[in-house]
Length: 146
Figure 1 (spheres, rainbow, N blue to C red):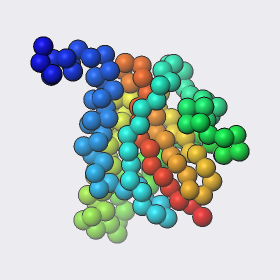
Figure 2 (tube, rainbow, N blue to C red):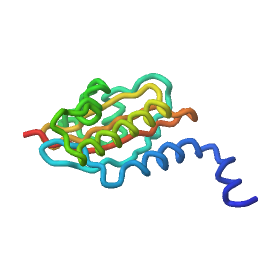
Figure 3 (tube, rainbow, N blue to C red):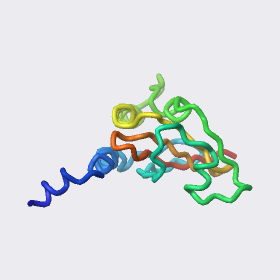
Figure 4 (spheres, rainbow, N blue to C red):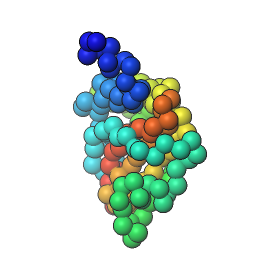
Protein backbone atom coordinates (compact mmCIF):
# COMPACT_ATOMS: atom_id res chain seq x y z
CA UNK A 1 0.00 0.00 0.00
CA UNK A 2 1.45 3.37 -0.94
CA UNK A 3 1.51 6.36 1.40
CA UNK A 4 -1.30 8.00 -0.60
CA UNK A 5 -3.51 4.90 -0.36
CA UNK A 6 -3.03 4.63 3.39
CA UNK A 7 -3.84 8.33 3.74
CA UNK A 8 -7.14 8.02 1.87
CA UNK A 9 -8.26 5.01 3.93
CA UNK A 10 -7.37 6.74 7.20
CA UNK A 11 -10.61 7.65 9.04
CA UNK A 12 -9.13 11.01 10.11
CA UNK A 13 -8.34 12.04 6.53
CA UNK A 14 -11.41 14.33 6.52
CA UNK A 15 -9.98 16.31 9.44
CA UNK A 16 -6.65 16.63 7.66
CA UNK A 17 -8.44 17.73 4.52
CA UNK A 18 -10.07 20.72 6.22
CA UNK A 19 -6.89 21.84 7.97
CA UNK A 20 -4.78 21.23 4.87
CA UNK A 21 -7.19 23.20 2.66
CA UNK A 22 -7.48 26.00 5.22
CA UNK A 23 -3.72 26.15 5.76
CA UNK A 24 -3.28 26.90 2.04
CA UNK A 25 -5.28 30.10 2.54
CA UNK A 26 -3.73 31.25 5.83
CA UNK A 27 -0.15 32.30 4.98
CA UNK A 28 0.17 36.09 5.15
CA UNK A 29 -3.51 36.40 6.09
CA UNK A 30 -3.96 38.61 9.16
CA UNK A 31 -7.16 39.18 11.13
CA UNK A 32 -7.56 42.93 11.70
CA UNK A 33 -8.05 44.49 15.13
CA UNK A 34 -5.88 46.91 17.12
CA UNK A 35 -3.09 44.51 16.18
CA UNK A 36 -3.31 42.39 13.04
CA UNK A 37 -2.93 38.75 14.03
CA UNK A 38 -2.39 35.53 12.05
CA UNK A 39 -4.96 32.75 11.87
CA UNK A 40 -4.25 29.08 12.48
CA UNK A 41 -6.21 25.87 12.20
CA UNK A 42 -7.26 23.96 15.30
CA UNK A 43 -8.86 20.61 15.99
CA UNK A 44 -11.00 19.73 19.00
CA UNK A 45 -11.67 16.31 20.50
CA UNK A 46 -15.30 17.20 21.38
CA UNK A 47 -17.31 15.19 18.85
CA UNK A 48 -20.94 15.37 20.02
CA UNK A 49 -23.43 16.64 17.41
CA UNK A 50 -24.95 19.22 19.79
CA UNK A 51 -23.46 22.72 20.00
CA UNK A 52 -20.61 23.21 22.44
CA UNK A 53 -21.06 25.06 25.72
CA UNK A 54 -18.81 27.70 27.25
CA UNK A 55 -18.04 25.19 30.01
CA UNK A 56 -16.84 22.61 27.43
CA UNK A 57 -14.63 25.23 25.77
CA UNK A 58 -13.07 26.12 29.14
CA UNK A 59 -12.42 22.42 29.81
CA UNK A 60 -10.97 21.83 26.32
CA UNK A 61 -8.62 24.83 26.58
CA UNK A 62 -7.94 24.27 30.32
CA UNK A 63 -9.00 27.84 31.08
CA UNK A 64 -9.27 28.90 34.72
CA UNK A 65 -12.76 29.96 35.93
CA UNK A 66 -11.82 33.65 36.24
CA UNK A 67 -11.12 33.97 32.48
CA UNK A 68 -14.14 35.28 30.59
CA UNK A 69 -15.44 33.10 27.73
CA UNK A 70 -18.50 33.91 25.61
CA UNK A 71 -20.15 32.59 22.49
CA UNK A 72 -20.82 35.20 19.78
CA UNK A 73 -22.64 34.96 16.43
CA UNK A 74 -20.56 33.57 13.57
CA UNK A 75 -21.39 36.72 11.59
CA UNK A 76 -19.36 38.73 14.13
CA UNK A 77 -16.27 36.75 13.09
CA UNK A 78 -16.74 37.25 9.34
CA UNK A 79 -18.22 40.77 9.17
CA UNK A 80 -14.95 42.74 9.58
CA UNK A 81 -13.08 40.63 7.02
CA UNK A 82 -15.46 39.68 4.17
CA UNK A 83 -17.13 43.05 3.55
CA UNK A 84 -15.31 45.20 1.03
CA UNK A 85 -15.14 48.94 1.76
CA UNK A 86 -15.16 51.71 -0.87
CA UNK A 87 -11.77 52.98 0.24
CA UNK A 88 -9.98 49.62 -0.03
CA UNK A 89 -6.84 49.49 -2.14
CA UNK A 90 -5.54 46.42 -3.96
CA UNK A 91 -4.02 44.88 -0.81
CA UNK A 92 -7.24 45.18 1.20
CA UNK A 93 -9.30 43.84 -1.71
CA UNK A 94 -6.96 40.84 -2.03
CA UNK A 95 -7.23 40.18 1.73
CA UNK A 96 -11.04 40.40 1.56
CA UNK A 97 -11.13 37.95 -1.37
CA UNK A 98 -8.93 35.51 0.58
CA UNK A 99 -11.21 35.76 3.63
CA UNK A 100 -14.26 35.20 1.41
CA UNK A 101 -12.59 32.05 0.05
CA UNK A 102 -11.83 30.93 3.62
CA UNK A 103 -15.46 31.57 4.64
CA UNK A 104 -16.71 29.40 1.74
CA UNK A 105 -14.36 26.60 2.80
CA UNK A 106 -15.50 26.78 6.43
CA UNK A 107 -19.18 26.83 5.43
CA UNK A 108 -18.69 23.89 3.02
CA UNK A 109 -16.63 21.68 5.35
CA UNK A 110 -17.94 22.48 8.83
CA UNK A 111 -21.48 22.31 10.24
CA UNK A 112 -22.76 23.35 13.68
CA UNK A 113 -20.35 26.28 13.58
CA UNK A 114 -19.77 28.36 16.69
CA UNK A 115 -17.53 31.27 17.62
CA UNK A 116 -16.08 31.65 21.11
CA UNK A 117 -14.16 34.61 22.50
CA UNK A 118 -11.73 33.93 25.35
CA UNK A 119 -10.42 36.81 27.47
CA UNK A 120 -11.12 40.52 27.84
CA UNK A 121 -8.67 42.79 25.98
CA UNK A 122 -6.34 40.31 24.26
CA UNK A 123 -9.03 37.92 23.08
CA UNK A 124 -8.46 34.49 21.57
CA UNK A 125 -11.19 33.82 19.04
CA UNK A 126 -12.14 30.27 18.03
CA UNK A 127 -14.43 29.43 15.11
CA UNK A 128 -15.22 25.73 15.49
CA UNK A 129 -17.42 23.43 13.46
CA UNK A 130 -18.32 19.80 13.12
CA UNK A 131 -16.70 17.88 10.27
CA UNK A 132 -18.24 15.03 8.31
CA UNK A 133 -16.32 12.50 10.45
CA UNK A 134 -17.88 14.09 13.56
CA UNK A 135 -14.67 15.64 14.86
CA UNK A 136 -14.40 19.38 15.32
CA UNK A 137 -11.97 21.68 13.58
CA UNK A 138 -11.77 25.35 12.85
CA UNK A 139 -9.79 28.53 13.07
CA UNK A 140 -8.14 30.44 15.87
CA UNK A 141 -6.91 34.02 15.92
CA UNK A 142 -6.40 36.81 18.42
CA UNK A 143 -8.03 40.22 18.52
CA UNK A 144 -6.88 43.12 20.66
CA UNK A 145 -9.49 45.51 22.03
CA UNK A 146 -8.48 48.11 24.59
